[in-house]
Amino acid sequence: MHILIVEDDRGITSFLEKGLRAEGYATTVAGTPDEARLAVEIADPPADLVLLDLGLPGGEGGDVLSWMRGRGLATPVIILTARAEVEQKVQGLNAGANDYVTKPFSFDELLARVRATLRTAEQPSSSELVVGDLRLDLLTKVAWRAGQRIELAPREWALLELFMRHPHQVLSRAQILSSVWDQTFETGSNVVDVYVGYLRRKLNKPELEPLLVTVRGAGYRFADDTSDAGAAEPERVD
Ligand code: CA
Image (cartoon, rainbow, N blue to C red; front, side, top):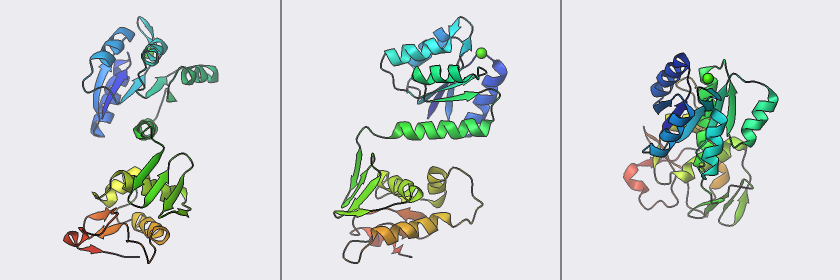
């Protein structure tokens, strides 16, 4: 994931670069609107997200945002500025910003907003996810299995959506925790296992193939069939 930082304050820039890189993001810095436009145009791979300061030498961050949206670029933008008036926030969001963070900011909060914004941006334009006999309607947040409607709590929904976006892949507990739960749990937390258990009770029926197999020592795998499950020696725990 590549983040473009548009900011003229060197101290903030290096603080952001250091923090974001430590979290595994690649970063590019632009200090003026012209540099920002150039960075947006030549970035390869393109930036996945832009952190945008408003007060810049030689122009306004807001102009960069309007320019991007005017060109049909949907890259998520988080405005990061000392201007905290509601009116300015509304203006920024109306101009097409995805979120707005005011300085001084906490890095942890900014990081959480970056992650949330990237997560939302990753959603495909299609409103449905289908794997095997399971279907998720992303707009109404209703799940169906073999034509039967299944009611899910928000966290169960997030967990199932994660599995359905990675069918047949083994997901570790740590991967699941960081994707579905934002906060860091102490190691040894069994919250993932508990929620996988909830999901299984709702999804699995005696007449249907079991979903969500436990891969011992590795995590869980979402499968819409069990034809190749034997190789991984799945152990089903309810
Ligand atoms: Ca500035």
